Amino acid sequence: MQFFGGSDISPLPPPPTASGNNAHMMYVFNRNGVCLLYREWNRSLRTLNAQQDHKLMFGLLFSLKSLTAKMDPTSVEKGNLGVPQLTGQGCSFHSFRTNTYRLSFMESPSGIKIILVTHPRTGDLRESLKYIYNLYVEYVVKNPLYSPGMPIRSELFNMTLDQYVRGLG
Amino acid sequence: MPPAAPRSGDAIFANVERVNAELFTLTYGAIVRQLLTDLEEVEEVNKQLDQMGYNIGIRLIDEFLAKSNVSRCVDFKETAEAIAKVGFKMFLGVTASVTNWDADGTSCSLVLEDNPLVDFVELPDTCQGLYYCNILSGVVRGALEMVSMKTEVTWIRDMLRGDDAYELQVKLLKQVPEEYPYKDDE
Image (cartoon, rainbow over all chains, first blue to last red; front, side, top):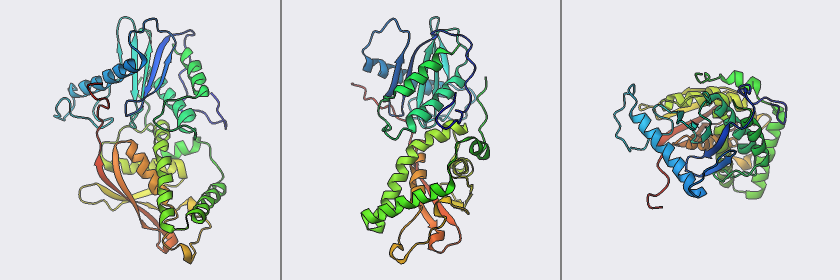
């Protein structure tokens, strides 16, 4: 993909393996729990209003991160469950799968969390999530009119994101 | 697929878009001049430069993390090395060296031999208290704050004031762990 000056976004995205809407929805949170972006492509059931849905998702991931770090058999720390962790300390979980969907998660050390919910046969999306993080940097962070911590309202970002996600296998 | 290895500062610097160094230096110089004209007080200008640097730093950190693939630093020593070798190289094209560690490893100095911001610059007598590169201290402070580290960044040596190098002292005040942001009753 080529951008403004001709520089490539790095790393290069994995080549699209299938076309069509494999992704259901996507969330981007910052370290304070603010939902910066929510995109929906294919979601038939919505039980909560938007705010509660975001809080639920954020809470779920926060707890999962905490639990997975504490249950780590290779870790040498003896922290108690519930003690706040430094962003990025300990092991980091990256996805879980149910019989109807797969949730892939990536957290940057700066606390930006990217969540992508896709159909269950999707493979490891870590590289794709990194690519999306790069897109976030290029289109959102570098935009001087965007205030950090506010929800993202960038048509260009949404468009590029949609295009990329449609190509995911 | 295992995550990609961290990239070196040189590799990233070779891949990013670059701007003419003189344009960069002259633009920065214009900013400082304008601040001096608007604010008149040298202390105010120092503070404003630091604030501007802070605003840059809170955004720069994401670009740094995205491009460099650096994994979470285990301790402050690693952080300082990452800033000096990868960060400065990526954004300014120069590497810094890390020296002067204190006993508990919470304070160190980043020494810059070469500083693109100060080409052609000489401080006149009216601006003797000015920290011309104060934007850099703001950038480091802002970026580290976004990775949960509260720091204090000050200039120890400044070539524009007659010293032989640029030395920035970075002191870790505390690490702020992530807290659940929502109150339970909401």
